[in-house]
Image 1 (cartoon, rainbow, N blue to C red):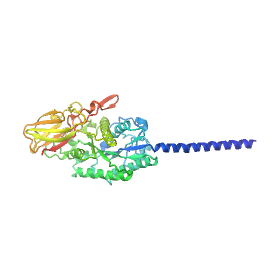
Image 2 (cartoon, rainbow, N blue to C red):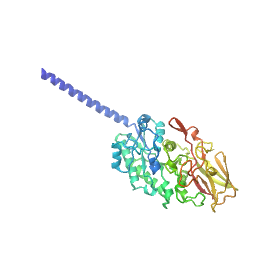
Image 3 (spheres, rainbow, N blue to C red):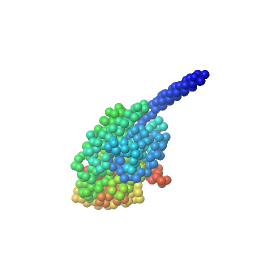
Image 4 (cartoon, one colour):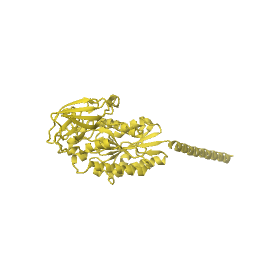
Amino acid sequence: MQRFISFLCIFASMKVKILITLLTILSLFSCRKSEKLKTVICIPVYGQSLALGIDADRITNLDSLSNYADGRIVTENLDHQFGYYNLDKTKLFLQKLFHYQKHAYELTSYSMAQYLASNTGRDTLICIFAGGQDGTIIAELGKGSIPYEKLIRDIKTAYQSANERGWDFIIPALCWMQGETDVNSYPGTNYQELLLKLTNDINHDIKQITGQEKDIEIICYQTNALARAEHFNPMAYECPETEVPQTQLEMIREHKTFHASGPMYPYDCVNDIIHIDGLGQKSHGMLAGLAALDIIQQKDNKRGLYPLKIKTKDAEVIIELQVPCPPLVIDTIQVAKADCYGFSVITPDNRNIVKSIALHGDTLHILCTEKPLNCRVRYAVNGEYMKSGRLHGPRGNLRDSQGDSLKVTVSNHDYPVHNWCYQFDIRIE
């Protein structure tokens, strides 16, 4: 009798195990079916120190980021291990193993991802990660470089992780944040040629991985660190330091795959040097999020505040501007007042002939002391020697009014997110 009871117990135990196994298989199958409904939208940021958030004290709580929008913001591993970055695989592994987050800075990616997660469906994951290397010229970030190969490796990881789950995966855009070292080190290269080659390589290599047909579009910031260059002279007719920011502006104006986020001068820089602070990263991330959502939704919204046309009439320079959110405003509160609000008209013999500035709708009028023949019209080409940022660096006071309704919140305080005019240096033809 005892043996019979033991047999029944064993048989019952086996049935329970079989039932649990069947339920597990059915559960996995069910999850597999539901996972197929997911779409992963991946938008990396690539560049140098500002892309990596160097020195930007973190505002975003990483646990809150992990839980935001039901956990729909993820890393390249489609997990929530935010705050880790290293070009060395072993060091990166050890950082994660020991939860070493001493350099877990605030990233543009965080607020961008939160904005996107809030404006996409519950079946959509937002995949973000930063790439690049601080203090590096563009020539050393291209295909074959260690930072570039890590970027591509991370994209492969994200794609494979999604593919294993049966999820759709697409990279609609990449955020570009690089140029400071090219401004202040005088590498003697052609920035536009290198940027076009780099973005073409990125487009080709990503499409090889994902199989997507749509090109990867570029969300482009603008570096403004002119005064960090040793030989910078804002009064000089020939000003090589403006090549990089002017190129970034021209790419946005003339190339359909480039989209504006914004310039860096409206933000505080840590120690007034070069790296924007956490609030700057968070605010800029919102601008990147606006551009990214336009790309995802295939909307042709015109982002960025910058000159469209420049003409002259007698002693007047007339600048027609693209204004995303009118009206235009001269703001000397958020950005410290610059001479002539940041505008200058430089003659071939190195004189600034600006007399006064006036706004009329979407047009800015500069009255000069003489006819501006063959002059260069500039904005935000100024600043104290070796300084950057909204108080002492190269800057201007022209913005739109987007921040009247669009804000970022930090510690229960709202900060406006305006579009500030891109720095420019344009020769009058």
